[in-house]
Image (tube, rainbow, N blue to C red):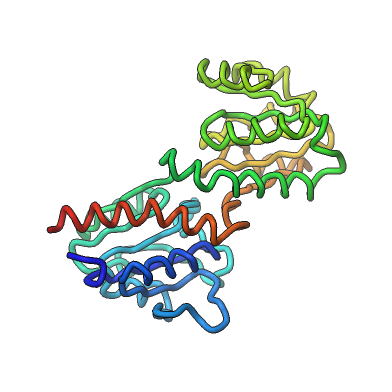
Amino acid sequence: MSWKDLTIAVVAGDAREQEIARCAVAAGAKVRAFGFPWPDGGIDGVYHASDAADALKGADIALFPIPGITPEGALFAPKCPEKIIPDAEMLSGMNKPGHIILGWGDPNLKSHAEALGITLHEYEWDVDLMLLRGPAIVEGVLKVIIENTDITIHKANICLVGQGTIGTLLTNTLIGLGAHVHVAARNPVQRAAAHAAGATSHTLEELPDLLPDMDIVIGSVPKQLVAGDLLDKLAPGALLVDVAAPPGTIDRDAATAKGIKAIWARGMGSRAPVTVGRSQWSGISRRIEEIMENAS
């Protein structure tokens, strides 16, 4: 099997998927697409499908977005007027054996894929790809903070809940901008790394005492840790920014009901779609090459 033998469907997403589709064409594949913003003049070599099922028809490989799936099962597609929920009927038109490469799949997608003999390849948590798209995510989070506060990041009291790959990049950047950065993490090695970078480190158990003094709280853990009574600890006017995969670190619905500004800052990589699209393709193409090698 070679690239020219492949039909790739790029379904859902944002402007990053435009660049991914261009990269797939440049590699030699036949490309079908639906569900992301379509540029004026189209994309050379890419068939613009009428719907997601049409895009997936005859595809050997489907590419779904990194940001994942909503609680109702819809793919990340912020500019698409219709919800794209990959059910068995939609996926049944793919060639067999089929492959879906995506950030992560929910139980329903996994069940449909298994029943149809389609293999899922998840890469939401691949550290190399996180680092490659990390600068764009950090820049996007800074934009969210600047547009939603009346204070400077410089000298602001900011708490990061979680200190994984993106959390670490945010910590380093915010320290560089002069913020008073506090990091709450379960992992003692992550807390030590935050301390070494110049932040003040805390256990998660310290959050009730820490939150009242924070101007901004950023969550990067895909588990709701800032919820319930903890929301009542926040100072008036505090900003909550959640960059974690669903369900997120922050109970955003509860926060909004209490009058607290809470923003789900997923998909921040879209602010630099060419750069991030190409970095995502570097990981996607490696997986496709592995699929082709195993098929030969």
